[in-house]
Image (cartoon, rainbow, N blue to C red; front, side, top):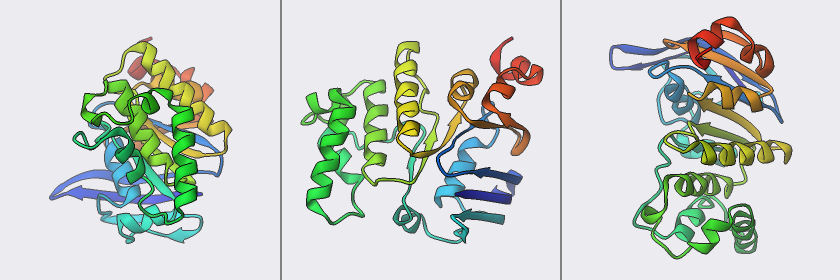
Length: 234
C-alpha cells in the first residue's frame, strides 16, 4: 500500500532523512521506532505531505504521490494523528471530531461515523460539548484519533500516540490501535516506546539519525540484542 524509496528531506541545509526505504502492506501494522531526533516525525510529515521531500519517492497503491499536496493525500484516504495531539482547544469535542470529515459530503454517513466514534470512545460522547482544551492528555489523544478516523482512512499514520501518557492510558491507547488493525485499517505507527509498539506490530523498522538501521518482525526486533540495549533498557 505504501512504498518509500531512497527518501531524503532537508530543513534548510540540514539533512533529516538519508535515503529511507520501507514498505507497509495492506492490512499490516508496521512500527517505526527510534530515539529522539532520529527523524521519525520528519518521515511521517513527508509521507503526509507536510514536509517536502528533496529526493526519492513516496508511492501509495502504486501511484507516485511525492509531489502531491497534503490535502490531496487526505483525499486518497491517508490520515495522520500528529505528535502532541494538536486538537483545536477552543472548539468543542464534537466540532473537533466533525472536522475530520471535512472531505466528506454525505451528511448521513458523517452522522453515522460520529456515532461510531462515540461508541469507540465513550468519554468523548460524555464530554462532546466541552472545549477540547479541557480534556486530559489521554482524552485528547482519543480525540485526535477519532478526528483522523472520521475520514475513513485506508492508511492511518500514528505519531507518538503514547507520548506523555500514564502507563494505564498507554495500554488503553494501544488496545485501541490493535482493535483498528483487527478491523482492517492499515497502520504505520511511529513510537519512542519501542516495547509497546513492537508488541503489536506485524513488522518493524528501527531508525537512527535519519536512516533505517534494522528491520524485521515485531517479535524478532523485540528479541534483538541491539534493540534491547538501545531502546528497551535490557
